[in-house]
Image (cartoon, rainbow, N blue to C red; front, top):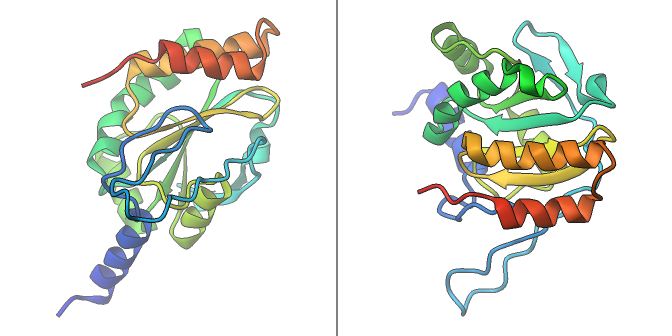
Length: 209
């Protein structure tokens, strides 16, 4: 018989992995067709134009609101300790957070997981950027970004006006991050508008096998 903790984990994983097997999409307004033509169409996620202001506890238990970073471009990565591609991303995200070429960007990891599991994981795997943690409230945060039916990981990129430039679903690799960050930087510099940035991201996004 499963323990209460194991039962809770199974429920949480089931809720998050509603669309396991759905391939990654990059642009914030592009969605996939259902695999079987006889099935009803997948309802597209409604991704907000402006980053929602959610509040979650950090690793020290302090409540932190995303509005704390208003006016600063951000990389917001949703992950979980049980998610293998999420774990693979962490070294790259650590390097990105420590890269002096990208100091204007705030990197925030949002763990949709049990708090005790995240804290235990952090003792063996350092994360060098802000980590916020939530169980049901973590799921609510994902829904606030319009990502209720998409699996982990996914990463939201916002500009300095807190607008969502794009959402990358699936494991993020450094060349992909650099394409997106370059486009966000161009938007913030007034060199291109948001739509041009999204078009550039779609055109320039490297394919990673």
